[in-house]
Structure formats: C-alpha cells, structure tokens
Image (tube, rainbow over all chains, first blue to last red; front, top):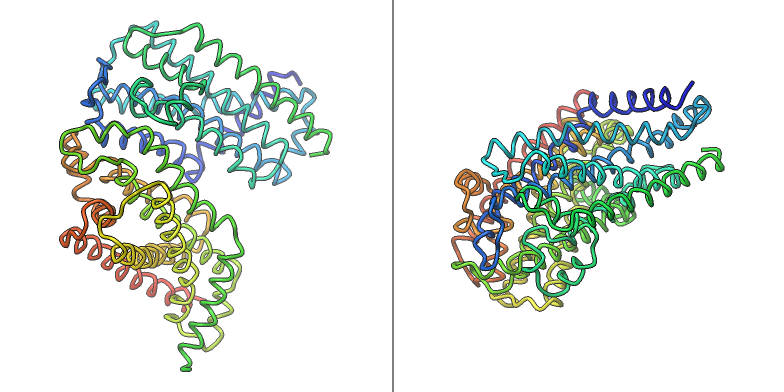
Length: 256
Length: 258
C-alpha cells in the first residue's frame, strides 16, 4: 500500500465524517458566515473613521480576514478529528494498518484543505452576493487563495501536532486558543496604522498581520510585501509540519 | 422546611457543587468573553471617533457584551449538565421518587444562577480595574448584578428546555452556533443608529438580544435610561418565563415517558 493510498483512505474517511455529520459540519460552515455577517454588516461604518483607506470597501476588508480565519479553523477542526480518532482507538488501528504512517498525517491535511475549500466557496459566493468589490485580477485572487491554503496547512499541522501528543479531545482548547489569539491580535477591524495602544504593538510583531495585509492587498489589486507574506506562511508551514510529524513519532512511541 | 423546599435545596446543592467542581464550566464563561472584549476594545477604539458614538471609551461600550455572551455559555452549560443527567439515567431514577418536576427544574438551575452572579461580578471588577466609569453608580452596579442573575436564570432555563427536549449533550453543543447568531446580529459592536447596512440594522432592531445588551450598556455609559431598562428587563423576563414553561413541560413529558 503506497503513501498515496493511505492519504486517500484517511482523507476519504475524515471528509465523510466531517460532511455527513451535521454536528461537525455546521460549526465549520456557520462560524465564518457569522463572523463575516457581524463584521461586514455590523461594523460597516468603521470605514468612515478618518484615515481608513481601503478602496474596495469594508465588506472586502473583512472578507479577507474571515477567509484566513476559516482556513485556520478548518485546519484546527480537522485536528479535533485526529484527537477524537486517538481517543476512540481508531488511530491505533490506523497506525497498525498503514505501512507509510506519514500518509496518515498527510491524509488528514488533505481533508482539512478540502473541508476549507467548501467553506471558502460558500463564503466567496455569499460575499459576492452581498456586493463585495474586487479590484484585484485573477492572479491576485490565486495569490489570496494560495495564501489562505497555506494558513489552512499551518492550522492543521499545529492542531494535529497537539492532537497526536495529547491524544484526547480535552486538548481542544489548546489547539483552538492560540490560533484564535493570533488571529484576533492582528488588525481585524481597521488597518494597522489606525490601531492604538497595546494592540498596535502586538499586531506589529504578529506574523499574521503581514499575511492579512497582503491578502487585503490582493483584493485591492495592490498587494504589499507579497514575498515576505509567502515566506512567513511557508516558513510557519514547515515549522508546523515538523511539529506534526514529531507528534506522530510521539504517538508511535507511546503506542497510541 | 416544606417538602418542596427540601427537594429544591437538595437538588440545588448538587447543582452548585457539580458546577463548582468543573473548571471547564467556570473558566471559559469568565475568560473568553473578557478576552474577546479586550481585543475588540483595542481594535475598535477608533470607532469612538465616529460622529454620534455614545461614549469616548470603547471598553465601556463593549463591557455590556460579556454579560450576554456569558449567558450563552450558561445556556450551554445548563443544557449539557442536564442532558448528562438524562443520558446517565439520573432523571429516570428521580422519576421513581416523590420528587416533583418543578423543584427538580428550579434546583438544577441553581448552579447556573450562582455562576451567573459570579460571572457578572467578575466582568464588573474587570471593567473597574480597566478604568471604566459606571454612569449609574453603585446602585447601577447592584442592578447589573440583579440583571445578570435573571439573565443567567432565563438562558439557563432555555438550556434546560433544550436538554429535556433532546436528552443529548452533543445536540446542545451543536446548537451553540445557532444561539450565537442572535449575539452576532445585534448591536454588540456598534450602536444601532450607526449600523450602515440596512438589513443588518433591521435585524438588530428586531433581535431581543440588542435590547438586553443596550440595557446593560445604558447603566454603564448613560446612567438611568428607563426605556432601555424596561426593554432589557422585559425581554429577559419574557424569555425566562417562556423557557421555564417549556422546560417544565419537556421535563414532565420526559418523566412521564420514563
């Protein structure tokens, strides 16, 4: 059995679980839409603050944040599934059955990507339906969704690494909270130059700020520090990839 | 002590002790709403520059949100705990005793009521430490504590209804996003008159949660706004009465079935 077969088997099972169980599917689909609605709808007047300058408008400004957020959380929610598989003993059987165990992690990661893709399509359709302006061209949009896909991988490899180390659903807050914090310590509501006080200092050193600014730039058709944002995303991806595969070794050593 | 009081006291003690022994029931309702409030207050500070914004402190404006967000946690906690009682057969065993349904319901909500008061006290202390000035003064703070208790009881009763109706903790957890819609599509982040998107402003105006938030907000930033207080107390009391009625009916049906 090749690695590809393992990836296919694990991702198929994970997706079937995620897409046929409303209790798992609904939060993944609904939370990004709630955030988008609440931010783009409820805070639209924020674009009237002196100094706020984002020509495509506040809906597009918030769309990018929610897109990246949904990417990260689709990865984290897939990490919950890994923890559940370990807790229920299924992962033990997976480890016994798979000759290429790296395929297990990659299978989950692929499932996380597909899961997020569905959310991204829904979110994009809703955003366009409510009148979001896109100033960027096709290449910009490819850049935006590629960047978000990298965030999805980072989210999954982070949460998967935690799941394989703790092997219990009780580690859920540990998977979720740091991701939540890093997302909200970025310039969520206004551009970085309009933030004041402690949140400005935190946002300035938060790597997600640069991904967010580049993503918003893609939508506006004038993306800043593209190379830097991709370098950060790929660097974090590699770091969390190592973290996740070490987690797998950890689980193997513990006999899962 | 009458039989009913004895029954309520016994179940209430169990409910309070159970809640106090579960850090997962206590810490998230305290920490998550405050963390979100601080982050929002930092990110949206410049909103106070908008003409017509009712205060110069976004933290004072945002402090009302944890009161209702914490209540949503109360709904989930009460629902999950009671669903566990259904799933583990505790309710079945009680149905074999002389215990009546109403004392059981009231007693089971005691833990959430105590937690609700602790939550509100915690949010008020955080606000005071952060420098928020309560325009209604110490009497307003006392009203906030009372309001927090009623909110916790009302939302807890809603959780109890869902739990008795479904008998499943997982279903209660899955309903969390549905309840969150009401919080999100409200005036939680902006005053209704400053919401620029028409449909959102209409939805927020029709949403009772907006009035619950504005009731708390009025005590913090306005002082004694009797209209806001009447609407806030009115909606939460109506929600509580309806939820208690529904929960009582669902409990009776469940105890009859078993």
